[in-house]
Length: 210
Image 1 (cartoon, rainbow, N blue to C red):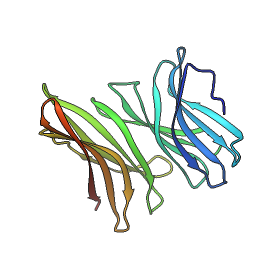
Image 2 (cartoon, rainbow, N blue to C red):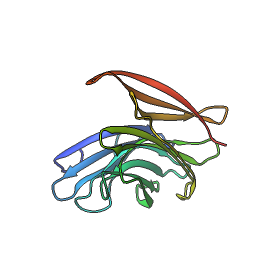
Image 3 (cartoon, rainbow, N blue to C red):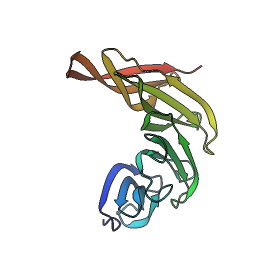
Image 4 (tube, one colour):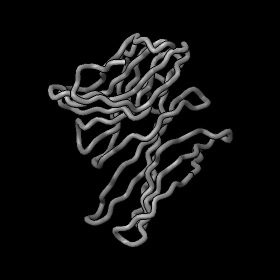
């Protein structure tokens, strides 16, 4: 399937939708507009039904990282925008035709990068992202953010877990809800053994929200 007439296009994620078709999340870029989120919907045979580019303004860069289908057939997209600071989280809710219903920007004065979005057992949505912080001259850390919202974009609660700055760096990659009402977070771990060498691995963290 051909993409739009742009200088660069890339895919991020593929979903099988409830109507038997498919949805694709990606990014496209051109010199006039910068980067935009690219959302495609096909039927079950791969025939294009519609395609949308989603972004805030010309020359502001947006990119999609993860998305899910909502109960109404629309999509909840989590990505980033560089409209302010070093990069913020950009959340977009579309209808079933890919039209934007609402959007939200979240972030800090540091660089914020999207990780994952899931639908919770109560019908609401949980978004995870990482904040790359440099509070002191020679030390970087990655902090975890969890944001729970409803389908209208109302914030139900937000959790911030400060990163550890000594010997290792954790970066959340994916999150799931467990049967016990907890959230299991898969993170990549860069462990500093002897600078500049690193030991790479993975770590599972369990988070309970009361």
